[in-house]
Amino acid sequence: PLPQEPPHPLPDAVKRTIVLCPTSEGESLPTNPDFPADLFTSCLTTPIPVALRWFISLNKLSLGSASASIIDSIPGKLTDRKTPLGELNWIFTAVTDTIAWNTLGRAAFQRLFRQDLLVASLFRNFLLADRIFRSAG
Image 1: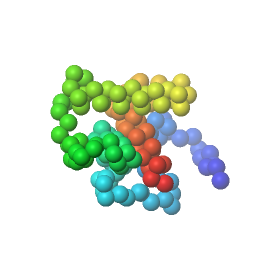
Image 2: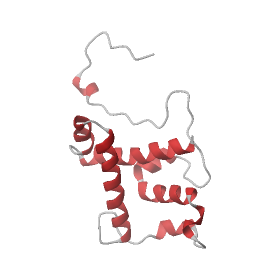
Image 3: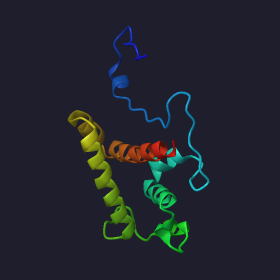
Image 4: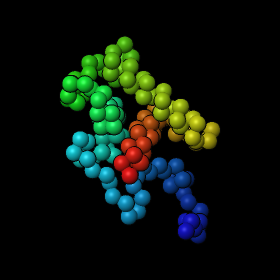
């Protein structure tokens, strides 16, 4: 059933509250020994390594004879696009922003992806978590 409207108007602070949840009621978090124990938090805080591990798990031949531990030694800084890690971060941002632009309405996109850098970052990373959790079933 659809949620009922509250019997009284909600305060503005509650209307502006954003809650990110990894599952719906009654669902469990997916587990996989190739991923961190708290996959949702890892997606939100370290999306590039998680995205690369997820890609490797889906494409076993992508590394050839290399080990997935190579992910932890990608050189550079996330904020420096001139480095491999920075370029990966830039690509991730472009892809997730494009997904959001094509999925959300204009007002929601502006509110979640353009008004606050921290909120935008969390929602980009949330899109990754959503994709990984959907693929895990």
